[in-house]
Amino acid sequence: MSTFAERLEAVEERIARALRRSGRKRSEITLVAVTKKFPADVILEAHAAGLRHFGENYVQEFAQKHLAVSHLTDATFHLIGHLQSNKAKQAAENFNVIETVDSARLASRLDSAAGNPIPVLIEVKLSHEESKTGANAAELPAVVDAIRATRHLQLQGLMTVPPWSEDPEHSRSYFRQLCELARKYNLSTLSMGMSGDLEAAIEEGATAVRVGTALFGPRPRPK
Ligand SMILES: *Cc1c(COP(=O)(O)O)cnc(C)c1O
Image 1 (spheres, rainbow, N blue to C red):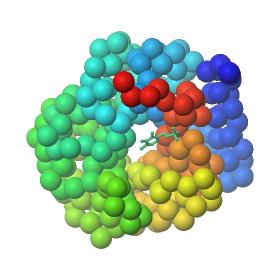
Image 2 (spheres, helix red, strand yellow):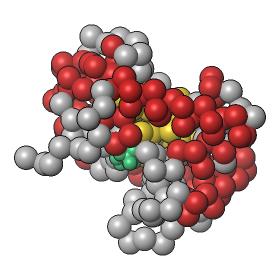
Image 3 (tube, protein in one colour):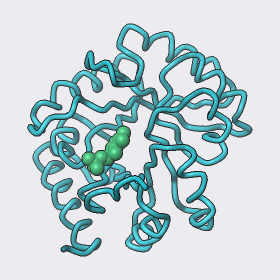
Image 4 (cartoon, rainbow, N blue to C red):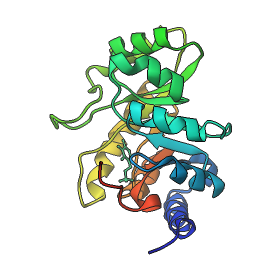
């Protein structure tokens, strides 16, 4: 068993190597620590170790944990899981960044629910997996326009989750496509890359990687 500090160091080394290979700087990458299914203590420990960005998948789960971490005023909480329109208000109340806007309808619900400006990303679905959420490339222009027409949503970039594969190289073409789409729409934030494929993501232009298992170990089984 390694300690959290050791795992964090190992992740930072992986990030550093990928940055060296691509001639990029550490300041270009946000490490989002994915704490879904872990108790709030895990967020506190990671914060104490210097992490400031946290990703959670479930609005309700995080709303419960939020009380225990709301004093971390320098922390940024990202919603990285699918958002249903009926949870838009709760999401706007609990998260600082919503990475998973994927329809004009959701954008409009979120805008009405938000009392303040809120940075958002569009989740893009680049594969044909039935199970995946996200806007596909054909739907993307309408979602971009819808977000840009809102009062409170600030469109910052795109996020994607490639199909699961043991081989990180399989993710590379999806990362490349996301990067091209971001360029096309003049968006600067690219949230892509997880524990298994963060190097390929950084080499292809990621500005944020979302890392769970490599930092915290296997997630606890659902109760
Ligand atoms: C769970 C999750 C992650 C983290 O995955 P790991 O493989 O544990 O690093 C990143 N992004 C999303 C959208 C997730 O759901």
